[in-house]
Length: 420
Image (cartoon, rainbow, N blue to C red; front, side, top):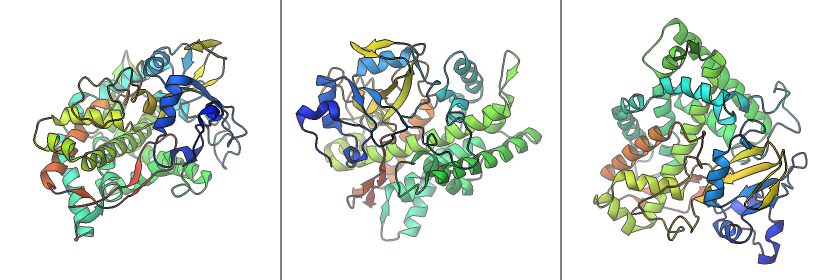
């Protein structure tokens, strides 16, 4: 891991993957919160892109997240680097932000609010609750398959189980055959893990994956228009607010957003949270014995291991954050992995503690319009997953070091070997 002498803090480039080899550089973020809470990174590895400002304190992250008029999600999208900017692959849109802007996560009001109102008509808490037993069945089925393939009881919590559970849960809700979960996992990996050459060897493969998934979803949408089913895809097509319906394009893009966010977020947070539990017998016993509720434990999973390290905003005018001048057009990254460890908000913030209550983390967003629409589903899914894991495997233990995904955006383990 790269080491940064104290006097060189202003020269740190947070896009440098060597800083992230062992996970988020929390020691570095602690120094930034204390010494340089709004920090400039030159983004040296991407000469066609300007650098970015990092917002590292909890309150500043929340404030920027709420002020959508000054800090736009739509103008520059949500990523620090637009990977198609320099050399778009054949067939990619001329505007590299075009696809991002079709999703409400990369939109501003009023367009964002209209789309969210329509989607909320279909994506209700009741719809998630109606899938409770299906979730339980999916989770146990994934563990059964892992043990069938690994009869010695040694398997990988991420690769043998974690990658499939959220894909099947989301797929079930959308009306996708469970056997297609493998496709959803592959498409998710190839479209979001673009920083890791072990997953995406060429950026063109990301564009190919996008084309594949859009074609797949288009077929499902056409099928549901002809023959509606009791699934989320049909509900999205039927949703109506003030005589307005979602367009096919909007349905496809929300479908894609839910697939990606549901896969990456739930997989990353749950498996990382389980690793933390298995590393601390005292914490594990508190949850196993019922001294701490599953709900409370999951909140600490999300605080300690937020699935997405940051989201980007773009300044719409000259302004300032915590006294630091910000120019119109500047990139501003909201580092949730830093806000969730802010000692001014969380006592002993670097300790994983399932007893933490209250726990007003920023794991589902820093506040404002873009609070995660799927937070309720993610919480419910992880609570059931935790319950079934502890019920089935009272002797579950770590069985090796594992490794992490190489990414500044996705905060997740690539492998967690365990044994039962």
